Length: 175
Image (cartoon, rainbow, N blue to C red; front, side):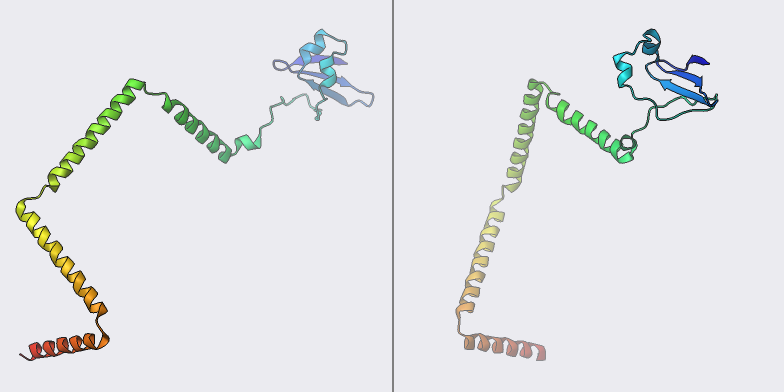
């Protein structure tokens, strides 16, 4: 007994009874080619036979096997990230016309000039402030000179100055 049933596009199931009474089932994706051309076609020679057999009348439709790599969450996230970065990098370069880029650069330069002018305006000091800064610098220079001189002085002079300071502090505390 031999019959053919078409399940979906391109799939067919052929079932036949063998000598021992068991049903032999053959599922082929190239059913249309095999039915139209009963001779041995070159395509059917290269198509391997399926690796499963079905003994029931309720035949399970073959499904495409899933790729575990493509189904993994890490692979999907990586794929999404690559798509978004490629879109950003490729499209953003040519997104703005040349005139618009030049105008934005001019605006940016104008803003920088305005900021510099504002900073210079804040930096302008009155004559009183200038005099105070000058005196402050003079005092700092004098302190630096004194530190250099004290570092060059012999050890006994340093000890003598320390004794004078302590004696003054004691006298002030007693008063």
